[in-house]
Image (tube, rainbow, N blue to C red; front, side, top):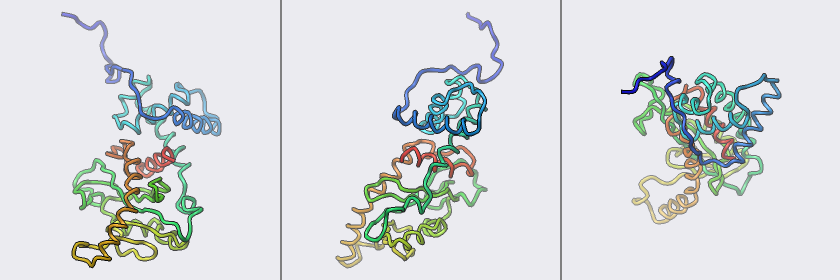
Length: 263
């Protein structure tokens, strides 16, 4: 029988690090590290245990894989508290580079069209948190509105609102309707946005019971709007947006940060 010669004083001391890879470009890690370096120089930060590149890599691992933070923290040789500080700092840096709504629509005008849709981000909440309960998915979630180009490239992502917020109300609250109307931009949206009016175009309900020209409109609408699903898929490729364990107040910052990484 083999007995240990030392006693573990904490949970972190029992964690075993291992080598792993992450499916992001090296250039992306370098770009984020330069943004972190600029922020450190701006704040005249003191010496840190991890350099800018290592901090950027830790944060990207957290966003991409969505593992509980103590695991990557142990792998990078820092405490969980330090890892949280690195994540919070980097998310704020990335979110600051995310474009605003009017900035994202710059260059678009009459004759152009965009795709608007809502996506739901599951969160860990109890049944008592009614505002976050989505009747659509029967889960506690946050609602995020996304604007994409006709080829599916994400242009803008909204702040996160409670899951029971309807897409129609969210589009109006975020100013999407008015911004697109002002520029006369055609918007292709799903049935959840029906009734928005302005320059929004949504499919007809019960298309099989509609006249042939309505059915043809639905087919063309679906074909043109299909690339917009690519924008949702790109967001959800960062697994932290598949199930967020953080405070609901930080989800909006995470969405903006991921949008920056995509664009």
